[in-house]
Length: 76
Image 1 (tube, helix red, strand yellow):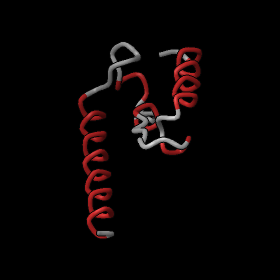
Image 2 (tube, helix red, strand yellow):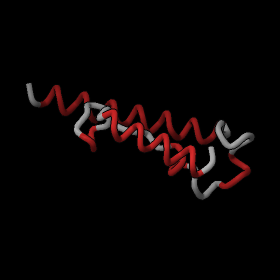
Image 3 (tube, rainbow, N blue to C red):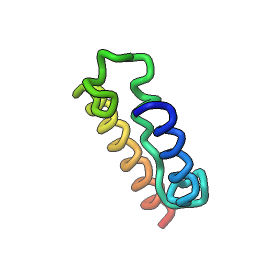
Image 4 (cartoon, rainbow, N blue to C red):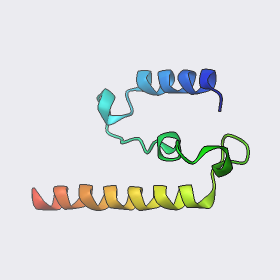
């Protein structure tokens, strides 16, 4: 994904109000930031990443779900 496409995507995402930081209910798992230091060797086509990047993303996602579920359970 080139910079122009990324900025267009980010703008639409911002205007959708889906993300928590813009008033919505969802969190963003930013794969680009997660893989920033990995460089070109972590993507074949600029859009799909190496398995290690996806594995790290899954760990982050599961940890976030665990944290969210405990916060909700603890407040009941």
